[in-house]
Amino acid sequence: MGQPVTASPAPAASWLPEALLAVVQDPFLDPVPSLLAALGEDNAVVREEAVRYLKEIRSVRSVESLIACLRHDAEASIRWEAAEALALLGDVRAVPALVEATRDPNEMVRLCAAEALGAIGKNIPGVTSALVFLLDDPSMLVRLYAVEAVGYLGDRAVVSLLRARMGGEAPAVRVWYVFTLWRLGEPFTFEDVRAVLWRGGYTARLQAATVLRLAATDDNAERVVSALRRARDRERHPTVREHLERQIADLAG
Image 1 (spheres, rainbow, N blue to C red):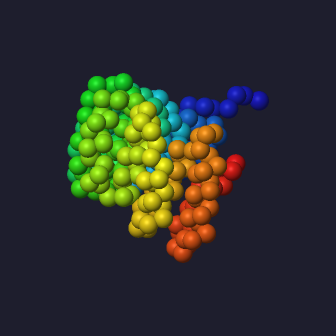
Image 2 (cartoon, rainbow, N blue to C red; image 1 turned 180 degrees about the horizontal axis):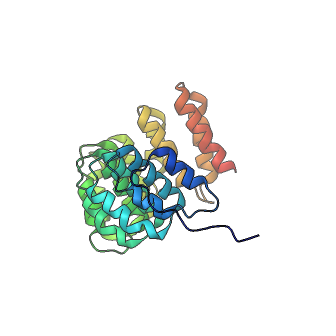
Image 3 (cartoon, one colour; image 1 turned 90 degrees about the vertical axis):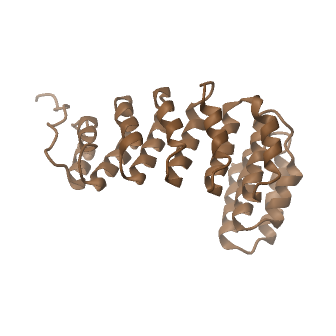
């Protein structure tokens, strides 16, 4: 018997989502060329499906095309999917486009750009400044993701700036300032986060629980688990209670 055919078919003149799915599921085809071709389709649904598949495949061959999507696609959902895909690829060629995307008019694009820069932007000029710009974003979620991303860059030059800003932030974001300052070498102010966990609003309690779990170390794990369990036992909102259960289970595992 002959060897299986592994080359991709010639790009279709006009892709449909079903055709893309067939290409991705065919074990004898390399789907990347077809997915890249589909990024040029007029149909936004096809382009978005192609980006999602490329995000799953994580081929370095898609970096330049995903950068083009992030910069130029008219659909915000495609731009933020492209930012997520570029974060997963981890290729620093994407950093300039991600920095530009921190000024995107769409909230989710800015959020995903911030998250991606935190993942791949360490030690690259301009990244910290772009994330600091987002600390004034009108969206609380964007500010939350931006301050978390700053913590992963390891740039201690922003410590004073973060300390000056955190007091005026919403509790749901302020707990991430605590986390970021800790990532940058400052003491973890456990009591401040626990106070939000107990007395904050719905979103703030969710964020405080996540921060406590992420900040758990061998030295404070018992204290963190105890705080999460006490919060769970007094929590009435089912979603928050379920989230607390997951954080406890993650630490136990």
